[in-house]
Length: 427
Image (cartoon, rainbow, N blue to C red; front, side, top):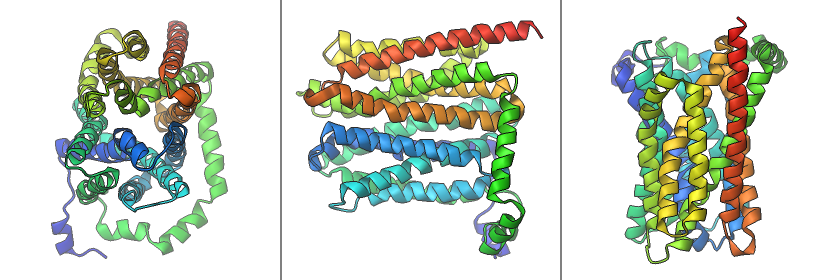
């Protein structure tokens, strides 16, 4: 049981700006490190472990299917347990990051660790957003939410800088992952600071074994499933076509961006052989422009609407996928990186805002469904890219298919836009 002195040592943080920065840090850890540090370190991992492109693609995809599972788990977390489950899965995210320092692990262990890292990222991303954003007042929610989501771009940028620095010092991926884990540890203390405002004893008793057993008596797995089915039915009733169109476009959005988000540094190593760290500079650009994108697109969405903004972002990202095909040198890759950073976080935030507003009473459920769709696209993407790359490891066909997928997704968004306008005009 927590004492009064411990409560003074670990006070509850209530300042909205501080909470937004903690949310940024959380996304930088669970997304920037838990998911995207793999992209930054992939060329070194492939060299040090003598991995083929096919195995690298499977390692990426297994992480993304973990993210899919994590999103599914997050949908079943009761609101009152949001903070406890966030702490649990953030701890697991940090542990799976640090475990990659273990030497000479079998390939199967790599798969297990990357799967668990993906699950942790999926749960922590959704729960941290839920916990952090609900702490903001209505008048500051838009600005502070943008700060929170900037954590994805910050994490990508930090993954590039950390990898670049340690490679220059002649360390390899194992030390890079260890340092990423160590730099993540202060997050656990900060997350403890945004625990629920109930007294500490109540918090700890709620996650204790005795209370978990008592809770299981009152809320069985079967009843949870029944409640979920009822909520799902109520969430989609009257909106089925709109939700299906937007979800299908989001699958293609996940599929479209992930080729670059996984293999950009590898493509740079292939094409820009005279520039030793071009891949990391390119990945750093992705992070920088991802940080800048949300305020930019948020301002545009206020002027022309979120759906039209999403259309423009999808078209721009499709163009970005084609640029490395049209320009074989540095320009195509750097331009692809800038456009990827500018678009993918904006596409995520726009889509999630649009889908939750379809039926605001079930916003968490709809956001979870959309995240599942996005994760499915990300799982399929690297496998398709690797299959198309063949023995020559040529990623051009993968980029072309990604662009085509995004353009099909754009067409679905246009149909969704017209459908929603027709529905609203009939109200």
